[in-house]
Length: 296
Image (cartoon, rainbow, N blue to C red):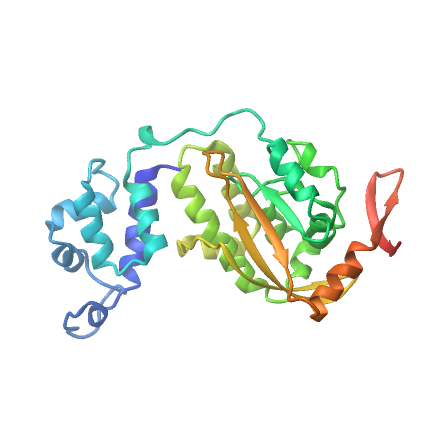
């Protein structure tokens, strides 16, 4: 994925989503293509139409901060979209290139999530791959997989891949479309920060080829930093859950994130989590994978 081709696509999608009346311009009848014209956006941003056209075509690689800020204002971008635009507009040489070595969770992070047996927790890498989970996190989001799966880098689970391609994970979310939109928005933000990441490009390509729903969402270029909210689930062992989630990130450049779930004390969801914590997977010893679960 090239930063400048991604920049052009982002600008085109956002420009097409704006109507003249959205930005105080007069709409003189039917247009051949939706949204603002290039010259209208250029006028609003205070740049020449030629220069803006070069940006959309990926031919300009040295846009100043003032120009990018002006374009962000003209496009009515929110804070997450604005940060994404700046990430795409920066030369790739200024970005930290991802390591080619398999990633792994820090030992301190592992101690942290294991010290919270009653809080489901999942440690994700920069591409939403699962680096680790505690017992309750594993039972909540992927009890059909082996607990040790994140320890095998070549085949470790990926939260976004599971959401679109794993039938078990798909059935877990009762509001799957909302969850899918949130996942793609987050992945777009990550892609803007890591444009020269072959593994991330491979993941996007795999999902685009194998999921029409992912491909349609990806083409819309949504961007959102999803750090908290509510997830609606139907777990095969404990039924419906309405859980809060929080995403925490360490203050380093690892790109790791800790996804944690919680419920209001005394709520049905809290009782369901307590029940899930008491469930022990039933393992197929020959296949070394969980078949289901049973109460302790």
